Image (cartoon, rainbow, N blue to C red; front, side, top):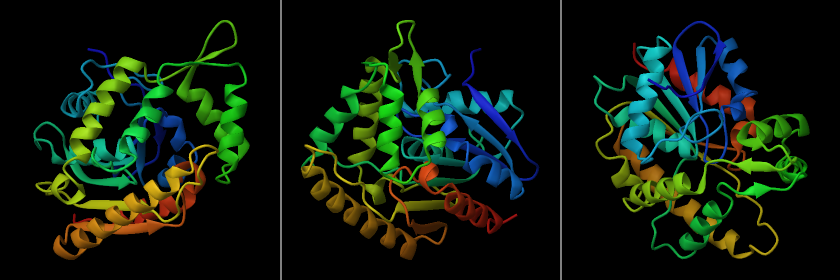
Length: 287
């Protein structure tokens, strides 16, 4: 059986499993994971199917990914864990917590800004097009340098941004880069995201009985040149998510909600703040 690529950051104590976002890899956690290990956790980071060093999975469905993740954790001797995910990984972490407890043994889940918009939202089609456009693309030799320059807009240190960018793409013999996931996988991921997003946040989280920490980015992404429409879209979506999270925090005691002074790539931008939030949440769990 082929398992997902994983990296054990060591540590002792309650097990944490770390998942990354779309088009990224487990190396996005390189700064935060050692802090979590030092805070008293055994820390394992995993590449999602079709990302980083993990093989693709077809069809790429959330139940199939949850099953593959469970198999991988079994192979690493992880009987129970708090699953922490950023962006796409956050949605997978929640779905892992929802799964049959005999198949996916999550004590709790942490979702770091992993929320998706309903397909009828104005601008949603543009966002999905952008997501798919870069999938499986051949990027020029200066791709990594461009990623580092882009990350600098968020205050992400160059060395951290470069290592994360290199881990998320594949170098080709002619000096160019192949982005991951491949386009066919990206199409399937987009379909799953649409399915989950169309529920809306409150209905999506119905039926999840494990403790959840839901973390929303407190600052919006700056619009890229030619994407001025994005600011209106992201502001509206953030407001809708915020209202839903506040309602969940009022009505469901097992759900904790936090806002963090960071933009969406928070695990690269503010790893210290992310690690502190996660460690404090886990310390407060029953048992």
